[in-house]
Each structure stands twice: as structure tokens, then as C-alpha cells.
View 1 (cartoon, rainbow, N blue to C red):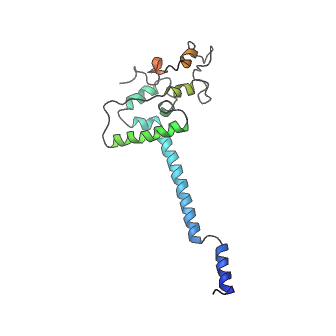
View 2: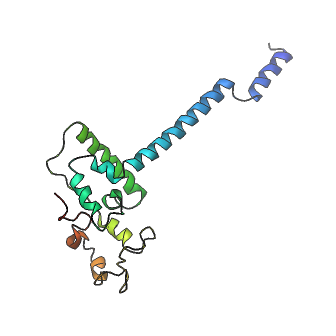
View 3: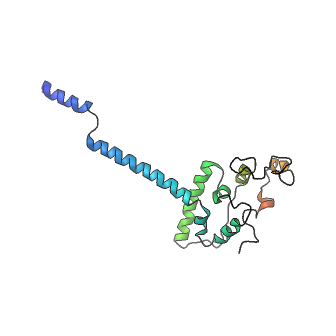
Amino acid sequence: MATDNETGNMLDRELSGPSNKTKKIIIIASLAIVLLGISIVIGMHYTSQPNFCASCHQIKPSVVAWSAGPHKDVTCLKCHADPGTTGYVKRKVAGLNEVYLQVTNQIPDKIEAKINPAACISCHTGSSEFPKAKNLLLPSGEFAPMFPHTEILQNNTSCLTCHQNVGHSKTTQQ
């Protein structure tokens, strides 16, 4: 049977909180999680830049064409990922497969760019991120398209029907 003194010592240990070893483990684990998070954010940002895309020689002509075109201030993923965070993350995960194919020299004969017209619409309907972009919702004015796009938008006609080369002008691609 425990004496009053032993019971008091056990209570003191329970009330004093985690041991120093436990505190160190928690601090190290927390720092590791924070550093991992920062590394992921930096890596995702770096791999979203046109220069990273151009490091694959199959894509380099498209990056050169993009840099001479009207969308040169728009990063690759603004057009080549679905709008929003979910679209960004989905595209980054798909990009991992492309990097794997590049590193293992399993490059497809033809690389098809994927563009969701919703990405076009997200920038061309008054986005504050690109205030000088043509606004499809305006009937006239400096930032309105040459002709109204209301019917085109209502019919869900793909932007690529008329604007398939707007991001990468064919005249500058080799």
C-alpha cells in the first residue's frame, strides 16, 4: 500500500505536465511540420513559374511563344489549371507525373496542353488580378471585346474555338 508521501509524489508528477523529453519531441515535430509546409509552398511556387516549365525541352518553344504574346504576364497555371485552389493542387499533382516521365525519359510523342475555358473566363470577367484584361461582360469601351460575347458565354462555347493560339502564338513557336 502506498504511503501518503508516495501518493503525493505521484500526484506531483501527474500535475507537473509532460516531461522535458516529451516537450522536446513536440517542439521538434512542430518545427519539422512547419519547415515541411514552407518547403512545399516554396516548391509549388517555384515549379509554377514559366522558367521551370521551360526546363523541359519539349515545352521550351511554347514558353518562348508565350513570352512574346499578349499573356506574357500570366503564369502557366493561370491557364493550364482549373480556377481555384483545388484546380491548382490537381494540376500540381498531375505535374508530378510529367516530371516523372521527363526524368525517366518516357516522354510522349505529342504533348497536349489542357486548358479549361473557365480559366479564361475567370480572368476575362473583371478579375481584380488582371484589371487590364478584356472583360467579356462589358458591352463597349476600352476593355470590352471587339464584339459582344454574351451569346457565346450563354451557349458555353469554348474560348478555344476562336482563341486557340492566343497564349502561344503559332508565329513565334518553332
